Structures are given as structure tokens and as C-alpha cells.
Length: 526
Image 1: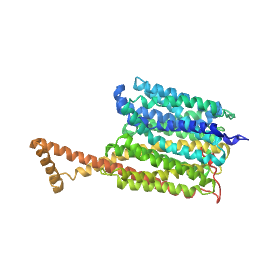
Image 2: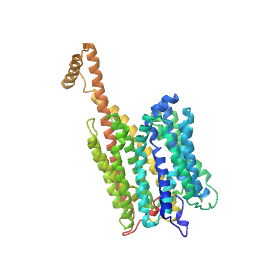
Image 3: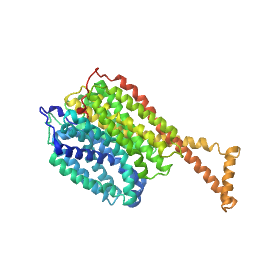
Image 4: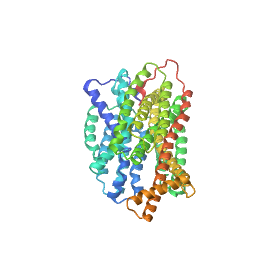
């Protein structure tokens, strides 16, 4: 994320060294992204083992997300101070040690603290990984690295719940953290041995107030998004206070960064039309990725009875398709194909996926009902990541390029947090509405519900139940059917809502300005 263009004579790696660096940084990025969602399936086991409530355990997820989203825009600044080699290696060490201490935690407070520290190390890995790749590959080969890296961006959050479910079911919840340790030890050695120690001088005073305002504003916003639904939003004094802190922090951050000479995050790049459009598209892309990871596993596991392994295996082909298409898109951009066309195709496919899933999401759907929509989703994502980044960074040079890249990474994660918060609230409220509507149809005056009720009673009586027992069981079965149908309808509408949001953002593509025949430098996409 730092200014790689300042190097007058870049040298690229060759042979085994090139691929060792590639494997190291991509593994680190995927490992960090897996940890954004790996805990989601283990919250009940953690709560039971540490004697915590589910609400307290939710902070294990929240703490990681908060530190992630705070550190990402600061990575370019920190890399300049310490040098990329030192900073990247130190981040791997911090992530590895904190992963071990997360697994060894004996209390929920200790686990939350170490998850926050883990997020500081992990966020730096994600934000600097592709910058390292860009300096490793020559321009004519960087599309290969972008394709593999892009696949990791999509596969990481997707594989998290699958891996977490398998480790929790077959070992213990601690292993969702311990699994990072051997990988981290190897990555530490390789990164220190092979990554270059590039470093840029800091001119002028360090923007400490900008860092403080960023932490208060973005950190507070992330806490509101993560905890809002659980605490009934603004009926909670905590959420109200955090919202006020966040709004004031963001306003102060914007004012500070627009006025200070050496801002930690240069918001002036948003004056560029392409950067502004790309920022909005990155936000929507983050929503689409993380909400699909949230909705799909919950639906198929809660309503179709699938296990974590079955859930993950179904979407692996679509993730591989995404990776292959990212490499193809990088090549197309280098040949002069407009990123606007590719982004339009990508978001169009994602919208089709959301609409198709809305109609196919039923309690009777099977693997093949989900397989082809997932392939459509994978196709769409393959046409978004590289072209959106290329569009956003097109024509930028020097520090402006680095700052726009940092914003893109931050907004993608923020979009995920915002999308999950919106969908959580939407699904919860739609479930209550559907339940009230469906319960209104169950009465003595409705012939169909009467027939269903007495049919259930006769079935239970034929199993030897008394009339009173059969009546109670029939009423319970009717209520259960209403609850299931309400939930299915609500989650199906959740898929549709994301499609609508993507459709609303899609016209922004036409406001981007790309010169005819302009070749977008995918080497700047990091």
C-alpha cells in the first residue's frame, strides 16, 4: 500500500525465490481472511467452555473486526516507518503468537484481548500482501499473482466457517487458532529471508491526531455495526454513545485529513471521479462477498440440515472459477479492455445470483439447486475484484495511488460489516412480519389450517398418543412449520436485498472516466 513507484529501478524476482514469496504472502493473506469468519461456527462451544454468554462470546468476532479495519489504512504509513520487510515479518509473528494465546485463553476476557491483537497483525498481512506481489513479478506476469490473490480474497471468508466447523467438531475450539501456528512459523522464516526491505522516508510531522480520530471514528462505527442488532440498536445507551463517538470521530478525521500537510490517509484522492466511483463499488463488493458467506451457510445448515463440510465442498468449484477469471481479467485489462465493461458483467452476474437464489431458497432445495447459482456467483466475483481496483487506480501516480489502494481495502471490509449488520436487522424484522402474517391464517375459521391441524392430530393419535397429547403436539408442529416458513422467506428476501443494493450501485460505473484504449496497470492493483 505504499508508494512503490518511488523506486527508480525496480528489480523482479525469478525462479524458486519468486514463487516462495508468492506462496508466503498469499498464504498469510488467506490465513488472515479465514480468521475473519472461522470463529462464527464455534461461539457456542467457546461460551460453554469459558463460562461466558453468547453475547460476551460475540465480542471475540467483534474485537478482530475492529482491529482489522483500523490497522488497514495505517499499513502504508507503518511500512514507510519500519520498512516493509520488518513490518510484514513482525505482523506475521504478532499474528502467530496471538493465535496461540487465543487458543490457550482460559477466560473470555483474555480471548477477546488476544483476538484484538491478532487482528492488528492480520490486517497488516492482508493490506501489504499484494504490494509485495507487485514488486515480485514483472508487469507481464503480474496477472498470475493477481488471479491467485483474488481467489484468496473470495475463498478466505468462505472457507473460514467450513474449516472452523470441522476443527471444532473433530478436535476442540482451540484448534481454530492453533492451526495458524505452524503456518505462521514457516511464513515468518520465509518472509524474513526473501521479502525486500523497502522503506520510504517520512517527511514532516506524523499525523497522530489523524490516527486517533480514525480509531475513534472507524473503530466506533465497526462496534455499532457488530453489536447494534444484538443490543436492539438505539434502545441501548452503549450503541447510542458509540454512534455519537463514531460520528464525531469521522467528522474530525475528515476535517483533519483534508487540512493537514501529511495526512495518514489522504482523502483528497476522492476528488478523483474514478476513485470515488471505485470506492462505492468496493463497498458494494465487500457487502456481496461477506453477506453471501453469512447467508448461504446459515440457510443450508439451519434449514436444510447440511454439515460444514458439505456446505464448503459445494462452493469450492465457484471459488476456483473466481480465481481463474481474475487472472483472465487482469490480462484483458492489460490488453486495453475497459474495466467498466468487466465490472458491469461482474455485478450483473452477482445480481442474477441473488435473484435466482431468492426463488430457489426453499426447505426442499438440494445440492444442484444451489450449485449452479454458486457458479454464477463465482463468475461474477471473478469479474469484479481486479477491474474495480483497476478502475479506481487508473491514472493515479505516486502517493495518490497508494492512498486510493488503502481506501479500497478498508472499504471492502467495511462493506462486509455494514452488509451483515443491514442483513441481520432486515432478516430479523422480516421474520417477525412473516410470522405474524402466517399465524393470522391459523384459526378455527380457516378450513385449510383446520384440516392440517386435525390431520396432524390423527397422525399422532395413530402413534398411540392421547387426544390431549396429540392436540399439543399438533399445535407445536403447526407453530414449528410457521417459524420455518417465516425464516425461509426472510432469508430468501435477504439474498434479494443484496441484489437490489448491487443494482443501485451498478449505474455508478457510467460516471467513471476511462480514456478509449487506455491500458489499466494491474501492477498498481494492490
